[in-house]
Amino acid sequence: MNIILGIISVFVTFGLTVISEKLFKKEGLYAWISSATIIANIIICKSIDLLSFKVNLGNVLFASSFLATDIMNEKYGKEESKKAIMLAVFSQIVFIISTQIALLYKPNDIDFAQSSMKTIFSINLRVSISSIFMYYVSNMFDIYLYEKIKKKFPNKLWLRNNVSTMISNSLENYLFGILAFTGVYNLTTILELTTVASILEIIIAALDTPFLYLSKYKKPLTKSKKMHII
Image (cartoon, rainbow, N blue to C red):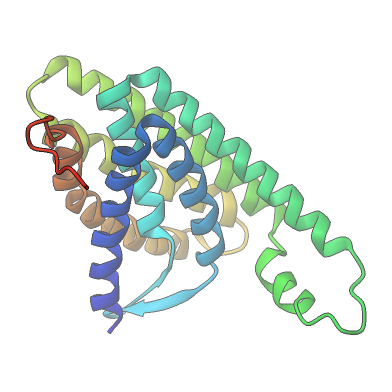
């Protein structure tokens, strides 16, 4: 069941990323990257079994931010991609500050949400800082590497998409694991967890390639082909 849901999530999430750009252009990608990152940081709290591995939710949404920045880079330029990442980082900081302040309020006798909110939003400061830092570094590296491969192989869209995303995703997983969990888990456990996450995200990254082609090459309808609604 989890595998089926995972496959559906990949196609729905990547499809919505493309639709977001089609409907709202670069503004849609700005909104997508920020909202997907925040939602991923919430649902990552849930752990599931996938085959014989334990994984956290949120991987697909995190991967969609790489797809979104690649679309942004391809259609609007690397400077717009960098701006989108900075906006997403700022959104994460606002999210963390807002939720932490909300937890400080003393609930009244009819409140039913405090305990659940505390479970979800009581984020370890070290983990939060590591997450934001590595999100910024890995996505900026993805933009840089994507642009370098694009200049060297301008006709190889699939190559720059897959190489930049796979390397950047793996970089994020390994460095985040070391920054956030050194001293909490031993190095062997950290490497096991990050390797499984990296393999999963490499597979997901390969699946986003058709959506990048769809975003770039799907042409808008001409006036003669548009339907006229009476």
